[in-house]
Length: 510
Ligand code: BG6
View (cartoon, helix red, strand yellow):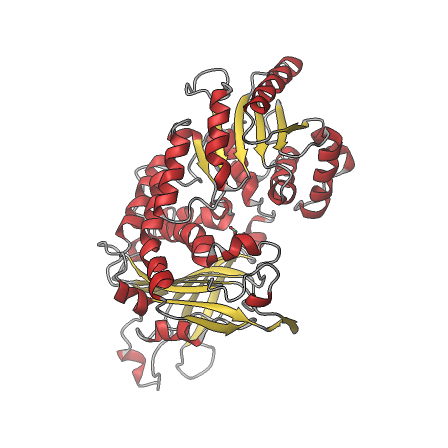
C-alpha cells in the first residue's frame, strides 16, 4: 500500500529517476540500523525507482554475500515493520559491495567501472547519489577522489546527475563548518549537497509548517503580542553507549542543539515563505537564525546552564555516572545536559524568550515544543478566588507520541461558576490510522529526487555555529557558568529551573 503521508506532498511523490546509491562507510552502524531498513520500507511502499542499486563502499574487504548477510540482520532488528524473506530477497538483488579505501584513487576508478557495468547489465542510466556515512575528516578526500575519477557531473542535465549526502556532525565550530562547506563546494554545487538533519525528516517536524500556515486561527496569534514564551525540550534516557569517543569530543550543544533544536526552532519561528520551494523556506529559516541574539560573555553566564550526570536511577534501574562510562576520559568536562534562554531580536518575536534544553539520562525519552500564550485579563474571574489563571499551552509532541494538544480553561459541570484547564488533543495514530514513516525514508527519497527542502543549506549551518560559538568559547575558556551535576533520572540540575524562574517561568513537566 502506498503511504498516504508521502502522498500528501502532491507532485513530489513522482518517482525518483534510476539511482545508484553509493554509501561510503557502509559497514558502520548507520547503514545497518537506519539506511537499509529505510530503503526496504520505501521499496515496500513502492517509492523506490524501478531501477535502483545500492553499493556499499568501505575500507574492509567483504564479499557481496557477506555484506548482504550483515544488512539482513539489521533489517530484521531495526525495520519499522517486518520485511518478509521474499521481499528481502527481491531487494537484496540490488545490493553490492565495493572495497573503497578513502585515500586510494584507484579504488574510485574501480568503482566507476563497476557503476558503468551495472548501467550496462541493468540497461539503466543511473543518477549517482553518494552518501557519506563516515567521519567528516574524510569528506574532503572522498569528494576530491570522486571528482578525479570523473564520478561527479556538474551539469545537472547530463545523463548521470550526481548528488552527495553528508551526515552530521557538520563541523565543530564556525571555522571548521565553513572549511567543510568550502571543501564540498570545490566539487559540488550547493544544490547537489544534501546535509542531513534527521529531525527534518520526522513527520511532526514537517507538520510545523502545515500547522502554522494552513490554519487561519493560529498564525494571527503567532507573535510577541500573544505568545509569552516557548520551550523546546529534547530529553533522552540513554547515556553515551558505545559512542563515548564521539560524544566526549562533542557534548549535547554540538550534538543536538546546533542541528536538531535550531532547525525546529527556525521552522517554528519563520515568516510565511513566498512558496514551498526549498530555497524559499530556507531563506526564511536563515533570517530567523540571523536574528537570534548573539551572546556576550555576561549573557552566557546569565542565560545558559550546562551539566553532567552522576549516577542515579532510570526506571528503577541504577545507572552509572558519565565519568564512569566506558571510553570517557578521566575528569572530562563535556556537558551531557544544556539549557539556554535564546532571544530572537526581530519584530515578531521581540521579548519572547525561547528556552531550549536537552540532556542524556533524563527520566523520559521525549521531544516536545511547547508554546505558552499570554494570560487573558483576569478581572472577571478574580472574585472566584483565582490567584492566577492557567495559560493556554499548545504542545507539539514530536516523539514518542506524535501529536498536538491545546490546553484551555473551561467550566466544569455544576451549579458553581468555576474554571479549570482541559486539554484538546490531536493524535497522529488516531487521526490518520497509519504509522509515520521513519525520518530516513523521507530524506533518502528526497535526496534521490534532488529535493533539498528538508536538508540544511550552507548558510543555515554557518549561522547556527555563529550563535553557539560564543557560548561554547566562554564555557570552554572561562569555565563559566560552572559545569553542574545532576542525578541520572532527574530532569537536570536545579540551576536549569532558576534560569526560567528569573522571568517567572517554569519548565513544563513532561
Ligand atoms: C543524533 C545524536 O543526532 O540524534 C544522538 O547524535 C541522539 O546523540 C539522536 O541520541 C536522537 O535522535 P532521536 O531521533 O532518537 O531523537
